[in-house]
Amino acid sequence: MKRLLPFRGKAPVVSVIRLNGLIAARQGSLNAAGTARMIERAFRRRKPAAVALVINSPGGSPAQSSLIAAHIRRLADETGLPVTAFVEDAAASGGYWLACAADDIVVDENSIIGSIGVISASFGLHEMIGRIGVERRVHTAGGSKSFLDPFRPEREEDVARLRALQDRIHGNFIAHVKARRGERLDGGGDLFNGDFWLGREAVGLGLADEVGHLAPVMRARHGERVKFVHHGPRRGILRRFGLSLAASAVSGIEERAFWARYGL
Image (cartoon, rainbow, N blue to C red; front, side, top):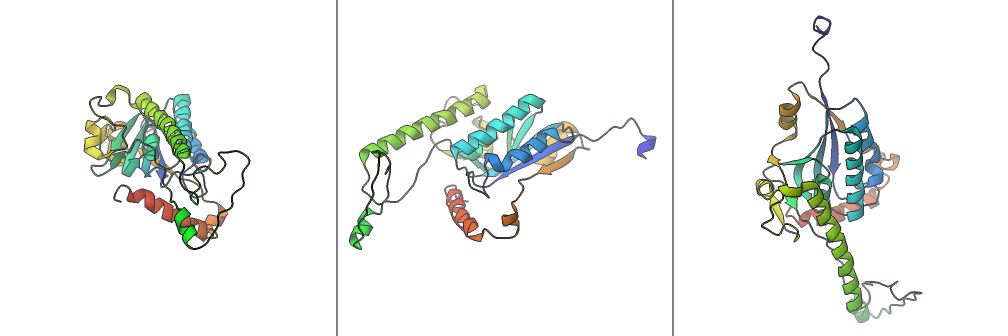
């Protein structure tokens, strides 16, 4: 049949990049090293008509979020390909940083969007170890080497320094969102206080562009014959054979805590 219809041409291709889970530097999480190859393949192989980011992340490392987003933008600018983010359960905190790497953001009615802020959480255990007769011994060269030591009473200067660091990271996050979303953002409300919203409300605030899903949106833009080529991170040999169970368990607990912030 194809020989009888030489004018029909090839079906357009949309490269789909899945960005799923906690963003962190360690193996098994979303990070710049683990996503680099799949992002390159998505933009370079099979001459795609567009790239779709499928995002489902509660956030994590600001640096890794920035590195992944910057890689996507560099390739989008080099190739001239349009990039659309499709949000599943959440694009929150660092997950929203990733979504803003796209030219537009499409959400589900129930997607959680936003959480543009910075958080640090830990425990103070100095009273507990005192009660059980444990003496903490720390020797440093440099007055800040025991910064925020959980086994010592909290120091005001440590908290002040932490907040200064958080403010700078928060400022970088806000600048990224404003640079990518521009005049689409609702200037009447505080979008940067760490709050988050459901899909349609996020569209109204300019944090997203429309409610929809991957296949119908891409078919409406590129035709019914569009083909989807999915790109995911490659698992290392240790993970394929289940030899990192302990690390996976710890990672799973931390990721569960991140999702719990959003009631998921």
